[in-house]
Length: 167
Image 1 (tube, one colour):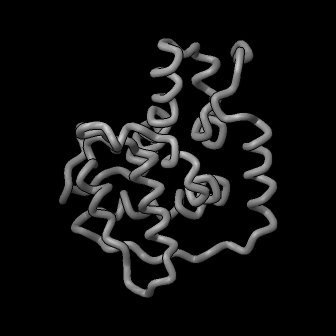
Image 2 (tube, one colour):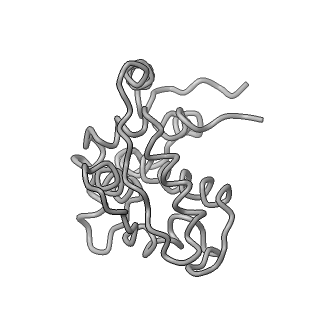
């Protein structure tokens, strides 16, 4: 197996707590998403991730955005901040559908350079690219603080611990 990390970017105890807390709580049903022309691939991935309870709990806590400096910088981009904002909007107690326009505007950064609006795209490919963008957003503060982050430590972000693995 891979070598153990020297430290954790997102503590394992916190992952365990998110997983434990997510079992006992009644799940909120979110709003539907408006199809903006062949955006089913994006909408299905967003719906699944918004309702992934440990991730939902983390995003609704506001922990990431409260300390993130990327969006405040000139033209800064942070996938996790965008996704947190979307999650909050998707879970509002409102009857109308959500138009994920802020995420669609950043499709190239979230889903990869080859993805195009108005074209049918692969949901699995978008999921992989989107989770990778969220993972990179999780790594950014550590890279800015420490410079290079060892590979075993990179595997300790929230995203990697929830969705990562080996085949």
